[in-house]
Figure 1 (cartoon, helix red, strand yellow):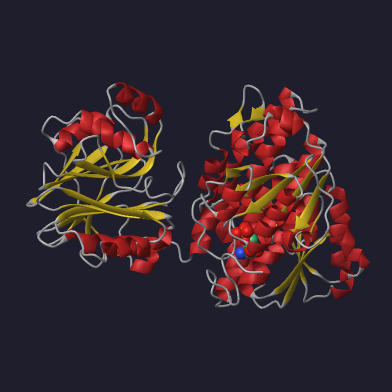
Figure 2: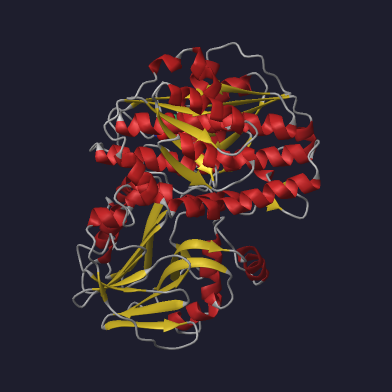
Length: 608
Ligand code: AGP
């Protein structure tokens, strides 16, 4: 997520800003920049890529000045290019703005300003806001900012400076965190506490609708309407590491718990309830193109391959299109039968996985249309496919993929819905699917609220050396994903299997030392899985079962059960995977494993 830092005081600002931005690198970003007021004007330096690219620009010497702002950008709208990097200036070039959030009515404001002769250099909503502030400037930066914010809709965390007011730094918050750091005769603003800790632990947290006006002899908190309000000064108790994880013990737990929000962000703007369909214009495929698809190949690796398997069930069940799911590492070396009537979907959180990238290039070479379901904006796969959907799940720092998985399944649901409604799916079925999707974030939160129940189950299985994960239908891929989570962070040998397959070999493994996790929602094959549970029970296996509320039959058979809310069968993996993510996390923590950076693993496998 984007990072904001600002400074006003007796010291040179540039170095402090760069150091502050470095403290926020963990948030994930793809461009950065600073603006400093240096007595003769406004000096802006910015660059795509990592902070090191910005620092190369500064090698020629840091701009002097004791007032400045800095930003790291995680691109959501507008590619991660230097022109799109923050800070952005107004038409006059005297006012610099950095911004976290989204200005929803930026398009209309851009048009209005263009009619007044404004010209824009970027694709960003932030530049529009800078121009609006400039347009409303009548000698007071804080009043111009207040006036502009009364005209915008959306979410923002802002820091603004002007070369015409070298003793003022204005900040504002609505929907995106911002706090003021109170130092010794120096003041800071930041999007989280991490860049402040080395300077001060005294902070003022802004609330939505509030502004801060920092000057060289103090700060004042106000709202858009009132000139001053009183706010308490708080002391930061957390250490730097805890702050970077948002108060969670590990990035993985933070990202598991972000899934209500990340799923909402994936779905945002794509659900067309009236028509019972989805908007997926990013695929760059017309409805006629989508109707003309005869076959779909989904290619990916690891967790992304598991979400692809769920996509196969969705697309074949709802859109009635034959689908094949291919390991990218296999696909790229096979001689696959694909042509221009085949749609190849590449799924990748990082957008940089070498095998998936190679598979997509192979598919393009053979004339297939390619789309990507990717989290990292501007990544190689996102740039090379013919179209796609960004997951908007936010940076995923933990090596074990969690929120990206549920967002990938949601993105596959959006693609499925669009195609299915062009074929046999009725408007009512489409609306039912949409309502189920809309309910998922709240249902995930309901599961997360009962994390302690999962932790208690994990305590009983910390010393196990093996585990089987069994599921049927669309929850067979969920079993694979749950097993992968356990494997990769706790180093327990866990295997996922279709529940019915157990009889064809793995049942030989069952004894009192073998925990068996059953994913058993009340779906179309529920009774079948009850039989599988009885087979394991009869051989002394220890059974952990994920069930819907009131499943007394399985609760009687299992050693431990965890209930999950009810949703449509095809969407149930988005819910069943949550307790499995938590289960692997709690077991791994108890085993003293490095949860965020497991041994031997990389977050993005950019080599074969
Ligand atoms: C999942 O927990 C792993 N980190 C790994 O399997 C990952 O899903 C795989 O390497 C694919 O990565 P991608 O989604 O970035 O392409």
